[in-house]
Length: 302
Length: 248
Ligand SMILES: Cc1cc2nc3c(=O)[nH]c(=O)nc-3n(C[C@H](O)[C@H](O)[C@H](O)COP(=O)(O)OP(=O)(O)OC[C@H]3O[C@@H](n4cnc5c(N)ncnc54)[C@H](O)[C@@H]3O)c2cc1C
Ligand SMILES: Cc1cc2nc3c(=O)[nH]c(=O)nc-3n(C[C@H](O)[C@H](O)[C@H](O)COP(=O)(O)O)c2cc1C
Image (spheres, rainbow over the protein chains, first blue to last red):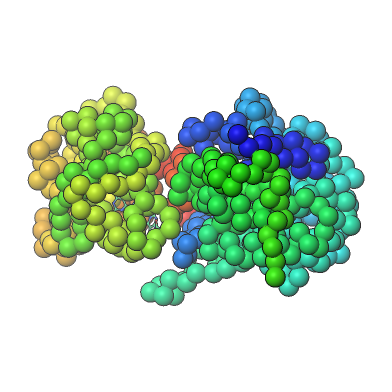
């Protein structure tokens, strides 16, 4: 049996697979399909200091091998999460990551303070393309990335992951800014800003007009960015974007990801997360690799 | 879950009637719940399709209209093929005791109402609305369970001429009704709802929205309910009409 354990920013996971924030709710729903202890970590839906309603429907559109979503960070708030979901999540042998969102630096700081040390890791979502204020705005400018990272790191009681947006010219510049601000790890990528128009009604499918593209369609972009960032910073990376199985996950790990997240693929196959864990193990066995950490960053670039 | 397609019929232009075999689906399925179906072809996501009938505790029947990529691919499935289905999903209609019931559906919204009518039997007055005579389907099947069944077509080519909701207003003038079950196009359900809420008749409507996971995790298929946003797939698709904010 190969060793699937990883250590990311001082937190040990049983295996390298987690859930992409916003695709897994608070664990309740997919918990009916498989035992969440099978995952290295569960990353919950974005949380803000106060509840958010999100955008009006329709907020999903299908695209070639993917989807656009414009949920807009609907969530019941940190307090509600702590009172209603946390205890249940704690019954599983898995790590818990809280994804944070807000409209101002103060919002993020407040959410991080409210969470304290009740989760194992914090993920700073400065890359959501679906909100008018805050969101991606922080993650597309290196100065604001560093500023918000520093501010949240100051109050964070758990290791801080900064989640990067692909909607930038140079992702390495943003990655370095997050590193300078004190991030303990980076995750990438969030969704790519996109649009779909119904040619018969001439109206966008999404009520928000635009949305974030995810699923297999974005995988090559994500792999490229993981590879670039791996060579640009020293921080451990959580790779995501279109991962559907073990082979996809291995590709991200070879590119430089210590861990991976599965998201959209689960909407088609509710077992995609556990299938990914099994697929990683199978690859390691077949290739006689003892530790999953041995493959991280081992892609042989030309 | 892989299920075998055991029967396939074409009911009308672009309307297909499928029967799949699955004891676990059939044992758990309730009227108003839906299946999330992987259709094949170029579509990426699953497609939500209502459960139309549960047969002999072993089969589930669903009927769908061919619209885009997914349903086109699904229509190409043949008897003996396996179909990948999640379900039964969502909350169905609830059936607390009541004596006088209207079941009102429009177009492809009538499919989930067959199982409802089967369950209610003679208590049900069934109202089915279609655009035109050539779109009228399933009337004889509904008629197996109740003899009070009325059809309306917008062009008058079959049954009452006009909207089915006009017919419902007429029936409410002379009949005492304590519950309404409804599924159909949004404008129809909105009209049903406004009459029903006025007359304080307990009314359940089945809503439709574009969805992702189908089980409540992705929170994309929301509708406006009582000042908040609820998930059609998990909190619905059946909601109490008095709570739906139709214009929000
Ligand atoms: C709870 C529920 C029950 C349903 N029951 C039935 C039924 O019994 N029979 C039937 O014929 N139809 C039913 N529908 C509508 C059916 O889901 C859509 O017609 C179907 O998804 C269209 O897929 P497509 O591949 O043909 O179209 P495409 O246009 O290729 O679909 C693209 C995307 O949009 C979504 N989409 C498009 N139209 C709709 C719609 N009207 N509602 C929801 N999603 C849509 C698709 O699911 C897919 O994700 C139901 C919808 C819901 C929400
Ligand atoms: C419906 C939906 C909701 C999402 N919500 C969030 C969110 O709340 N916070 C966040 O950081 N990312 C969010 N994302 C982005 C994902 O976490 C992930 O970065 C992206 O979808 C790429 O991975 P995938 O292709 O495996 O889904 C969301 C994605 C989807 C599809």
